[in-house]
Every structure is written in structure tokens, then in C-alpha cells.
Image 1 (cartoon, rainbow over the protein chains, first blue to last red):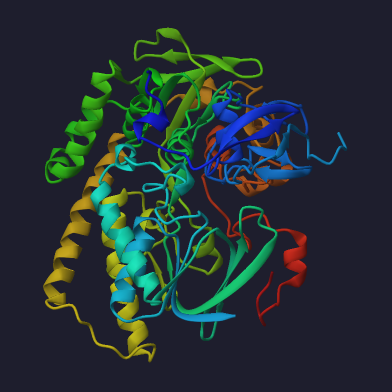
Image 2: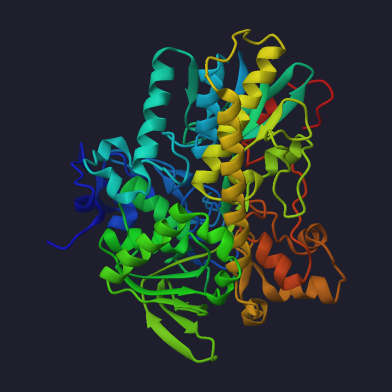
Length: 102
Length: 469
């Protein structure tokens, strides 16, 4: 089997569960952030910018840049690289400031 | 409001060393960090629910971490140290009897809590500098440290085919980690000139451990058939809704296009100095927090250690933290905080050896700093359409106009004219890029808040006398 990060460190995740991204079900592992879950599914963008509606995803990965903001369960402006995924989370692409004004 | 002898902000190598050393010497310590676990960026821990049975494969100097971790848990169990995790410090106030540290709680950061302490150690670390280039806002382009943090914490990769580029000592471990975890490293490009390292032979040869660390990463990458190319820079990233290629330029000016789905890029590190500046601590000419031989700042009972006092790596941070912790314990006990005398035998000679080690590692960091260099012509590669301020979407054209036609000569004026640096990140990310393109100095004005704060939290905050919020 091709090596991946989980096999490298011999991970035995406690729990796997599902979340949705814009309605599509995705597999998630407990302990992973929203950004990690989206990356695992090959998704790299989950926000469009306020001015030019350009796609954005993770940039700094440590909660400094605020590029990875996303809407989780209807609450916008969550840092995807910090917020842990929880079973049943409905993650949606955040458009602009996430308040539906753009 | 809980009160302690010493508060330590940051639980990376410097903060851990400071907190553990001060606790060993009988001082009541509260350690505060934004993450769910100790470790900082260097020892950022994999989420425990992922149950990594061989975590050491993702880290350098794992045994050092095990020692720190075990000392911390022993002190926590005995109640001598309080460790507050997932606390994002947004403001620190100085008062007659010490410091009040205000922090937002948890990942959603909706509420604030306050701890007070007679003394404070700032071990707030550093963050990456990324110089802008056309396409750097595409999804798939991210900081090298961010790729490493996501890998260590969540066991995920940014893509299948990753290019690692920029300049600085961080690129090697990042590339080695990504390759070990199964990513195809499609290219490694550092703009620095290897000949520059020859000028620092003495500092390098006296730090065999650090040199071996670099050699180890290089050997690892060689096993994965990754060629290390120096004097090469990524000059553009290409894609529509995500990255699909980068253009790399070599020393002869020849360009080549590399297909990839992720670019991990970084041009060195900058110290986090916001809190120190808010408290009135002096900065050195290089922009880090200025400290004396005991890691003391110019503010009474305020110490700083680690990357915030100058970028130097984890080993240097550990030594600085230890020196700061010992100094803090001695001073705070002297002022009636504990009253216990040192139990460390031979403390004098131990302190001398710490000072010598700090000197040697600082020399190494200085050599690294001057040997690694960003591409000299990077601003000319930034076309007018390139977005410099990622938060406010301010283009290079706007910044150039502010500088050349409107006469702005400093970052603050450029911010007022263009909004560059006014967004969520408060200019942390775009500062170096905007300053470079505008041709002005990278200065950071002290800001009252170290991070964005919900209005509800501000409304509820008790105001101390004489503090302007």
C-alpha cells in the first residue's frame, strides 16, 4: 500500500464519522480539524472573497491569516484550520462575509 | 480572577522551558497557549483521537519533547503548574502589581477570560514570511509551516504533488516530512546561494548537531529522489479555482513550468511582537523583542524568550526559556512570591554553560539569517494585478499608486490609503509584501489587540484605570 500520513505514524483513529460539505457527505476522523477533513476529500477551497469572489482555503494553517474561514452549521467565519470537525457537521462554502449580503 | 506568580504565554519550546524551570524553583506558574496541547509549532502534536502509535516519525528531537511533556504532566498532576489550553490572548495589561492577561476561550473564541500574575514571560514564537508573487492567492498555495502543521496535527497532506519553495532552514524539514508522509515532492527550490554558507564556516562548524539535522533531511529527500535546487525561485503560480502548476526561474534566468497541486512556500520567519509592543517593550533594530542576558525586557518583570526575541530555532528557544524561567523565579521569589531557595546544585556553573550554549546557537542563527536570502528581484516579478493584502484584496497597483503618486512612505499611510493590512490578519501576512512593493520599512505599530475580538467581549471587559482599550 502507498504510504500516507496515517500509515507513517501507525495511527488507529478512535472514531470515524460523516460530515457534509455543501450537502455532499464526507468521511472525517475525530481529532481532525474542518480543514483536515476537507483536504482528505481533495477539497482545497471553501470560501469566496468579499470583493472579487475568488476561492480561498488554507494559507497559514495555524490560525493567523484568517484565509480559511468557513461556515459550519450556519455559523460563518470559523477558522477551518483550528475548529475540530464533529459528527454531522454541515460545512458550507462561505460566500463573502457569510451573512448573505453579497 | 485567578492570580499567579508568573504567567507564560506560549507553550512551545521557549515557553515550556521557562514555565518548567520557574516551577522547579518553586514559583506558581500559569502557562497559556492557543492550541489544545503543548508543543508550539515545532512540537505541534497530532490530535490524540487519531492515536498515532509512532508519532516520532514526524518530528526531529522527539526525546527532548518526551522529557518536556513528562515534566509538564508531573507538574500539572502535583498542581504546581496550571496549563490553560485553547486560550487566544488578545490583550495584556500592565498594572502596579503585575499583568492581566485576557484570552478568548476555545476554537470558537466567543468568550474571554482573564488571569493575573506578578511576572510575565512572552514566548509567543514567530510566524512565516511569505513574499507575494502572481498566483499566490490560489487555493493550493500555502505556507511551508502551514503544510507541516496540518500534517503533524491532522495527518493530512495539501496535495499529491507538492512543490516546496522559498528560502530558509524551514524548507528542508517540511519537504522531508511531506515526502515521508507519502506526498510526491515535485521540486525543492531555495533562492539562497549555497556559497553564502561558506562565509560562516566557523559558526556552522561549532554547531555540529544543527548541521547534522540539515544533513539528515537532505539524505531523507535524496532517498525520495528529490533534488535540492538552490538559486531557484517560484515566480508564478498558475490555476483557476485551484493551483495546477508553478513557474520556476533559475540563476541563468531560464524558466520552467512544474505541474503540481500544492505549493508550500516560505521566506523565513518573523517574530510575534504584538503583546510585547502593547506593553511598551523595546524592539531591537531587527524587529524582535530586545532582551538582556537574563532574557529581561526593558519593562519590569517582563521577560521574553524564543523566536519572539529573534529567530533561532527550537534548541535556542529551549535555552532562552530556561534562562528566562530561572531569572523570573529568582526575581519573583525575591519579591516575596515564594520564598523557596534554589534546589539546583551547581546552579552557577549550569547557568554559565546555558549562557555559552545560547551564544553558540545565536551565532548559528545569525549565520543562517545572513546566508539564506529571498530573491533580490522579487518585487519586479509582482505584476500590478497581484493581490498583496489577502484579507482586503488590495492589489500591487493600488499600493504602488499610494507610494508613488500619493506619496505614502510608511506602512501606516499605505494602510489608510489602500486598506492593505486593515483586515482580519492585521497585516501580519501582507506586511512584508506591501513594504517591499512600496519600498518602505516593515514597521509594526503597536496595536491594542493581538487578534480580532468579538464586540460582545469588549463590551463586557472590565476596564482598568489608565488603560486605553
